[in-house]
Image (cartoon, rainbow, N blue to C red; front, side):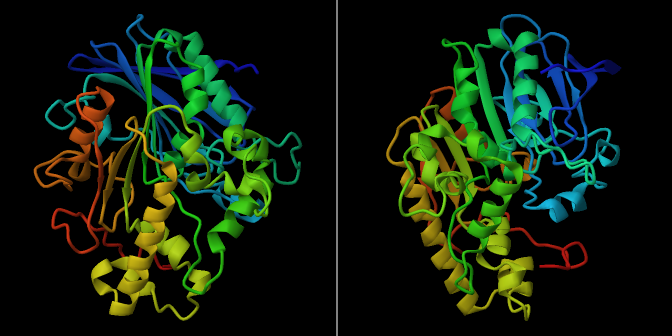
Length: 414
């Protein structure tokens, strides 16, 4: 799997942090791919994976990671999934489908911040951001390409190309590494956790962090298995079966429509993950409430519309349904089983993706569990200072929550 010609180079500096961005073109994936490496004096590196986009690909890479002290940290940004040709084509000419529509520069905050006061444990790590571009959490692998659409469903090849290229540029000498992600990227960090660890040195400290990536398989308010049907179509469209964790697919057999479909849900495969992993998730995850519990198709009259915009607008019966969803979420979470190597920060907020936002990652009014911010909990866990496995009491018990409030104009379909 070869990477094409070098296209451009960008370098800038801020204090002791230099930014190197290289762009390559390649045809291994459905879609355009980018990442940048930020090198600091501490010679640590964070890898963040990013947004979705269905065309060709470009990757921003550093020609060589600096020194033997380099440490990778990947965070996969959110962007959802496309489950059929129509939904994948709808992304093609958007920021989820083409690098031409992506912002040229992105402000880093939260776990990506370079300032110690905002990111006490990871501020001096190198930071790499890779744009998420396949629509299947990097599991797709379809050889044939329909000339009418020119969609390449090859996210798994994109993933492998990125990892192999970074290994050749110094990541093979990493002493510490974190694979992380938010939303669809958070699911990526779960699905690829063990395979990521297997590619790094045996003696390296390698852990995974999933932010809002623990999507559960449960019925919607109409009683339908909406999310299961959606993921079933997605797995079929992208040819994802062969790239889902074999530790799960080899065990799930009778009783399920398809083992490969079920293994896309963390509750069926996360227990087999051997690499230490930390889950940051709101028990009332706003994306899951909107798209799993009460998707538009199950609410044709818009009964849930106002509630999904702002949890304070929810009626008593809707709150009751959301409390039932929380119980289903915690039941699915219990499938992880006991393990001191795992971390949990499950607060009772109406939120989605909290590690990349400064206000929720580490600030004076960040969400707290046991008087601990997400940043402190993750840092203590990664550096083995102290374990952290906390599950919040039911809504509305936590006054530190930053509950999401959505703009009707920006979310007319809710």
